[in-house]
Image 1 (cartoon, rainbow, N blue to C red):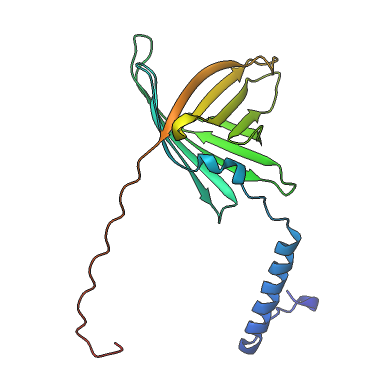
Image 2: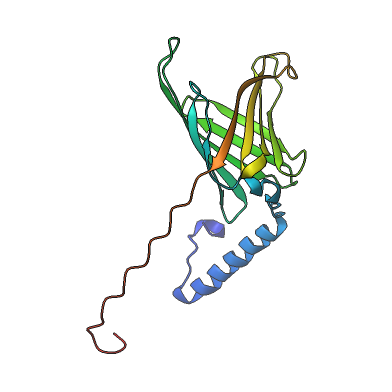
Length: 201
């Protein structure tokens, strides 16, 4: 509402000026927001991967793909566990988004089909390795996930859990090695249909 309670209106001739003012204001806000640092140290993870399970272990695939013009890295994960004498077969799917906050610190948010939600602090101990560690809590377990480059272009991973109240007492829950999945050849473009209309149609 305009001052005095009357409704403000914008004529058709004022719309371009009004829109330009909004764009300038939005540009100023964006300029004040520090750009997220590039996720270059995690570049070794980008691609599609397939696990190399031993007999009886879960099999699975992972994909790491940049999104939002490279400002985040999205991991999707799918794993299948065979039935054993102690548990039935199961399927696990999860999604994790890795990003930088305005200060440049790296974080990752994780969700899965079992209802788990985890926030990780992310660090890069050395080239070709990355570490994800959840917050310590006296009431809940603490999680640590790590990836590191391995010979022959492979990547090794490890998932560890520390019990509540013992934030540094990590024990390995799962360890694996994964290899890049072969890329499918790109399909050849279909031949263009012959033109039947007049030139310029």
